Image 1 (cartoon, one colour):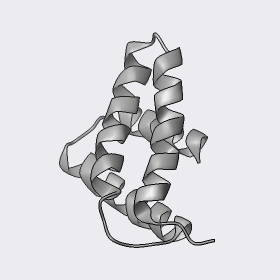
Image 2: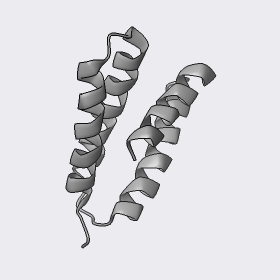
Image 3: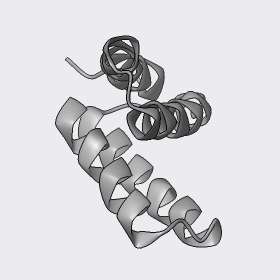
Image 4: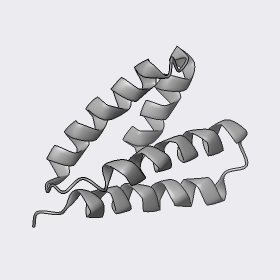
Length: 86
């Protein structure tokens, strides 16, 4: 079954919210919030497909991390968190 970008975004957001609610670590909370914001925007794209979403979101996330000059350590932690909810 093909899912929409909105549905895929919701899947990932639900898992991140679970982590967010269980964590007391300020860095983890920041990384969750960072990804939740980007996923909310990306989920609004009118397209379909889990793999398509993941590929498109990875590209957008890497572009944003570069534009915002996120530290290498934070970048790795954000990417690791995203990978853990996939």
